[in-house]
Image 1 (cartoon, rainbow, N blue to C red):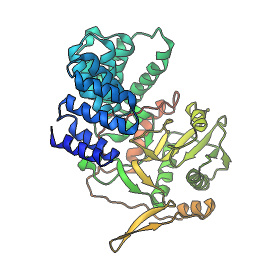
Image 2 (image 1 turned 90 degrees about the vertical axis):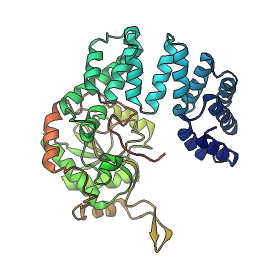
Image 3 (image 1 turned 60 degrees about the vertical axis):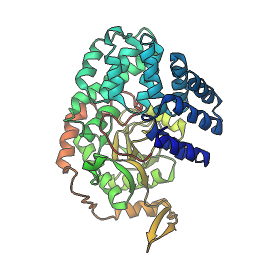
Length: 421
């Protein structure tokens, strides 16, 4: 048994469920599937996943049986631990290479892990036997999310119109993604703004100045927001609107407090009336601080954009993309703390709690507008991103910006970034 798997068993015996899962991620490519299954069975029993416990028990007894491997992999995908499913499903596919359900389940597991290049490779190796729906569509989708535009275009050209209407939406989504990619013309797999536009349809206003060459590639892992950065985002939003010749007549306020603070500041900055959000309102700038956690009815209303509606989100999660992607985002972060939110700080080696700023929304909006220039030179490794670069990008992509529905793509796309697990 590998050291990593031994550590996973130790953590499980101690009752550390999250720690066990993290350690299993390290162990899964080192240990035998039979041994992995034994730990997963015990873990599943501890959290009440009886279906996965049963599948793990079966695999531990029959590690060379394709059906046992498939059932274990399927159970792992269903329970949100797709990284555990991948080696089992790979082996199941080796043993049963002509079983379509095994192929699609392996692709699903790889997609969940954002291992799109591997998913595309698995499908391309079987290209002559692929069904149009879903197999060839999945090849288009994963090739695109891996950054292989040539493969995505070539496979899309071979994809017939679906006979089943349920595939019409996925087809439309990938067509829009490739159309946006053609307009953005990402220069390489580090072009975060280009790929964010291609995949999510969002114009990204800023790049993180920290850790670009150390694995972040323009995204933030953890960041404490500031009034200066928020104001900088609003000013860059203004640049986008002017360049794209978009002139909203109002700013629509969303119900959560952070969005109302930011929306109030935006209305004052642009000299527009602030109004309550109405999904039918045209020519309006809808302002969100962070869309994750928003009411499902609100998100459903935003998926179909009214004419002239622009959705702006200040802090967008790249590890858990919003159900409704924004048209414009200031920054991409895994964790972002609003300047008025409760936080922690270290003083002389001790950690102390800083309570939330409970001042009225109007006062905090005024704080944003009174902020100074945003200056964060970072570590000097992030490429320069002057306003002229943003302006040129907007001009190049304006014709395909804000077209179609706002469709979620549950992937950060082909640009790699380091993340907390």
